[in-house]
Amino acid sequence: MRVEPLSSAASECVGQRGPAPFCATGDAGVEKGAGSPKKPPLEFAIRTTVAALLAFACADLLNIHHPWWAAMTVWLVAQPTRGLLIERSLARLFGTICGAFAGAVILTVWGQNLIVALMALAFWLAFCAGLGTIFRHFRNYGFVLAGYTAGIVVLFGLGDGDATAALALDRVLCTLIGLACSSVLSFRALPLQGATMEKQARDILDRVLNRVHSALTGLKPAADPSLISDIGAFDRAIDEHAAGSISRRLDALRLRHISGLLLELIALAPRTGSKHPQTSADITFAQDEPLQRVHHIMQQAQTDGHAAMVQTLTDLHEALDAAKWQTRRTLRFDFDIAIAWQAIARPVLALTLASLLWQVSGWQAGAMMAMTAVLFTSLFSSHDDGNQMVVQVLIGTLAGALVGLLVRLLLLPHADGLLPTLLCIAPVLLFAAWLMRQPATAKMAIDLAMTFLLTAQPGTAPVTAAVALSQISAIVAGVLIAVALFWLVLPSTPAVRRKLLARRIAGLTRRIARSSSARTAIPAHYALRTAQVRLLDFTEADSPLVDTAQACLATAAETLAALTETTGSNRRAAQEQAVQASAALTALINSNFRIKRHD
Image (cartoon, rainbow, N blue to C red; front, side):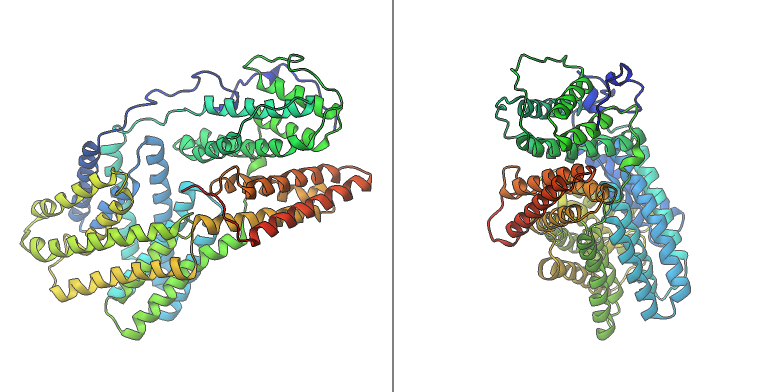
């Protein structure tokens, strides 16, 4: 591969849409309002509570059957910045509309046949959970929400004996009301998402290029033990940085691609050697010329015959030039069948088990048990630590159920009208909102509020203590089913995700080694880079697992470069090394050594 001279246009990061952190300098691109101080917990609590009460009041005045759903929406979209609020709201709107439509179809077509309706729901849950594993952050939330929204509509409808689409319409209307109230009261009060990644991105890029340049020139690289972990931290921050902006969201694909390329350069650097040693003073670059520096290092690698390094630097050079970067090149759906099957199995098993208990026992509130089990197994089906999340859900559910029972039996029967009803539920919502801003109670506070609203059911006719206790027992039983599935059957922990990712890296490396052409190896190579970056979310950078996975990344890159050569000897040697690296990683996965991880 011949490196063309660097054009003057390519040496400047101009004409970009949205921020380009790796090519920005100083404070460029920092939005107005960035760095705004965090709002006090009480201010957040008051604002969230008022928005929830307003949403409930609007839904009640419109005679919606489950007005508390509107208040729940306010809670579920509460976020610390405008960008995150926008993305969370859009994901909830998308998921609710799709899920409500699917639920309405299931109820309308198969509502009179319980078994068929549950089978159709299971298929929909599997489809949404499996597809959601391809995406991260709020895109994943939108898909799992589409799954469990259909579950809520179908199971509520079957439990109430109302196999019509009215329930689905109520769900959509409540979501729209909740989003509107949340936006009116929270949007202007929230700070803008500050573009604070430029300095961090540029620092990481310079450090990686320093290491590569040292390897190519025969210099001893400076000790930099935190470089790989810093790349992982940068990748984890991309979604929050990109929230609320289409241009930043598209640019996030480019930044993630760059993160994988940087890890690959680090992996390749120790495997290169200089044929023309230089001193550190032989070449200097201005601090605002990353493209020129990459181009120079690329020429040096080509001179020394390091084909894999040249290819990776070429990809990096193209990715750094945001004005010319083609987003469609990174629109590759990374589908991991092992992770997808686990995500699919959790809600489907929960629905199956809860439905069996419901039908065998003849429990009148069994549909609510099944709905709760489906909700939480779907919500955390792709979560990196679902085991801990369902424990927090259980704590919040128990607290919310107890408070909801007391309010429903002792206060709400005496609340005649909308205003007294709001006064009955306001103190609990205010306290829960305050807990939501405390680090120790943030996770369980949302479930406390959700369960409180679901058990208190403000705005409905009073019920006997026996009925209320039956419904609460069903909710708790559904959560216990979710806890049992996560802890006893299909755990979702950092250790499990780490092993699945490591196996994927080993498998992708073997696939590349067995490829007959570069064309067939390229998709696996992209997926390998992505998996390597994701591995850093669950493993310390100095872990033997990361070192061995880096060897897979390097040998895969060398194999891909060798596949473009006409001589077979270099190709066979590179493929053998890739197979050996894959085998070493597989052996490490199967061993019982302890891996340090992020807690």
